[in-house]
Length: 225
Image (cartoon, rainbow, N blue to C red; front, side, top):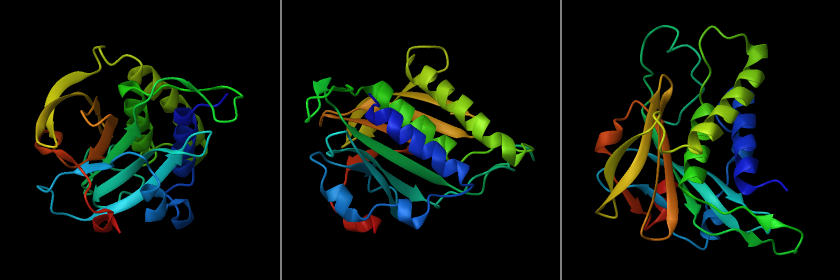
């Protein structure tokens, strides 16, 4: 049975194969966010830049289980800055919220829905970053293979949050210092942690220092429309 996390990861990779940002048809309206039975998280009030909706994802039973909110410059696929040895001019951070729940039987009784964890958030964030990444000097025809390989790598990394590829840092969530797992690559950064509100948080970005970020429950989704 296909899990929620694998489905959204494949969707993110597919967006990347289209060679750019998600199309307007792939974006969800605020209605999808309003259907979630949990609070959405974004950057806190210290961030004064643009905010924008991305996508929500549902489980096999149709319930909204996760989604992303963007902050800063809306990113496009970067396939040149790394090869040129320069930095991306885009500055953005995407916050992924995923409902925390144990493994449970699907509504139709045909199988089990995957339990979510901090690793789930780390994987969704890692694959999200991949959707806006393309190594310099890579032939377009090879990008699908690269995305498949990197998606598998993102899963392996997310499954080993205590490994050497990750470091630890504390960032405020609703004003409370909260531990996160954090890693950097040449294409950006990824972090993941859990909140006292019963959701897991993932985040990814480029051009914005992760050390100055804070997260908070979104009080008004209108700020993202």
